[in-house]
Image (cartoon, rainbow, N blue to C red):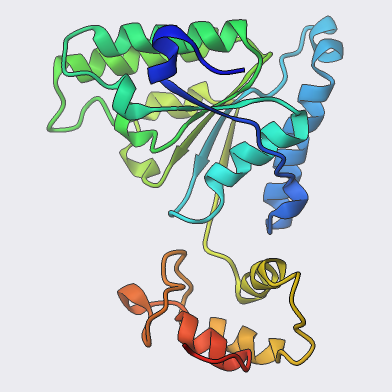
Length: 250
């Protein structure tokens, strides 16, 4: 199923087979996501008793911590398409055009069951009282709030942001669930590496040394780079981790 007409410039379609078990998540976050899946699978039963399943989700955290992968995993678990909203096609410099395109997107939310991902959501949901705000930005946000309120529970609307502090306060009341992502612990970082190396013989790897290397300074999601020192001054560099794993640095 591919978006057609004007929607083709607003949505990118994917059919992920990612599962939550493919991710390294802390227990509290995993329980929250399992709840989303359970309620969606029991949606008809919940609605018969007058309840609405969780279907509007805000994911907040630094880059590289798994927000987009979570949207893919929810789609994969529910066997639904993943439609990613293309902000370059959505946001227009012409007055009223962005709100009209938003309506097209939410019409699709109502007509086609899927997971709809608004990535880098702070581009749309910035605080209305911000000093650089203009009337059109307020109208766009007001339109989004209205459309989100009316979004049916058949689809999941997922918004991801790296800068939750920039979002308008009203948005936090509109989402059914807010999930916060953080940098992995040293043990979680090792789990991620083990998943990536699952097809390799790691019998000689000193995982305690890898853990120690990951614990030297606070981890940053963007610092696992092929440099002798970590980018931004924090986190284990790829060279340091390779040394701890007994792998060649080059």
